[in-house]
Image 1 (cartoon, rainbow, N blue to C red):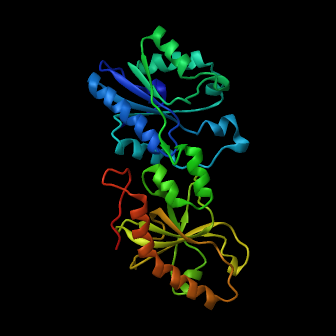
Image 2 (image 1 turned 180 degrees about the horizontal axis):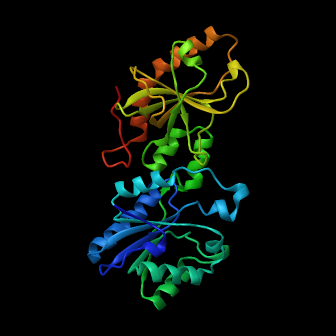
Image 3 (image 1 turned 45 degrees about the horizontal axis):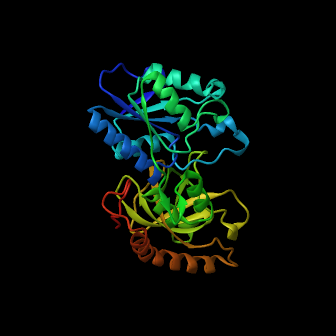
Amino acid sequence: MDVIRGLEAFPAHRTPVVLAVGTFDGVHRGHQTLLAHARERARILGGRCAALTFDPHPATVLTPESAPSLLTTIDERLELFAEVGVDLAVVARFDEGTRRMSAEAWVSALTACVRMTEIVCGPSYAFGHDRRGNPDLLRRLGARQGFQVWVVDPVEAGGERVSSSRIRRLLLAGHVLDAARLLGRWYSLRGTVTRGEGRGRDLGYPTANLQLPPSKLIPSPGIYAAYARPSAGEFAAAVSIGTRPTFGPGPLQVEAYLLNFSGNVYGSPLELRMAARLRDEVTFSTAEELVTQIASDVAAVPRALVEAAERAGFGESMVGRNRTVD
């Protein structure tokens, strides 16, 4: 997949381009359906499938005081685009200039740079100043400027539309398995392992402390079962998200104990694929009580991962799927 940063960098082309438009945070099942439609249209036309996304997220400019934490960083989003078969990813910068552009001006700028044959969007797609543009306006502009518009119906699960905001709510409530069903894969936390205070090692359970991008959404505090992916492979893991209240107040931390792993991961990248919530965060009276509970949590992880995979119903085609566990 080719990555193009900035509309003005879009290369000249003669083959048809089918452009999927949206923010695509999470690249969830609804997004995957939209992108699949764009891929199919590109195949029929003998052209290329392109996906347009924004960095930073438009909400950080439009409503910075209430901008959501992100399900996917831009790098994660691009990786997922490649996995679902996008040929070209266009990363457009969203800034004050973009915010002030009218819907008509935005489409004119898009057409001048990309010269797409077709655009694929969802029914709630909004664009331009004050989000005044919608699919109906896009169709009218397409008729004038020479592109066709396809509007893809949303995907529903449990009688409700699959959306990035719905997935965020689930994660903030700790429902990582329900979020995975809507994403079509496990929710992923990626970061760099940093040195902590060594409490886990002192207790007999050395943990990897994960430093995450500041914009990344962190699930609700609690203890989770996850698939951990250091450079050495993939391992079952017990993950603690919280402030370690047994040892007094502290900052929110993400720590993972990797089962059957003895390597050194400090300073290295680590991915945690969150599969199941085991319990809430609890304050213990003594370190001994905490150690007993940690042992119970660790013992519960393998079975929790098996049950989560069965309940999620993940098949071979799921994006980002990996269930090999040591």
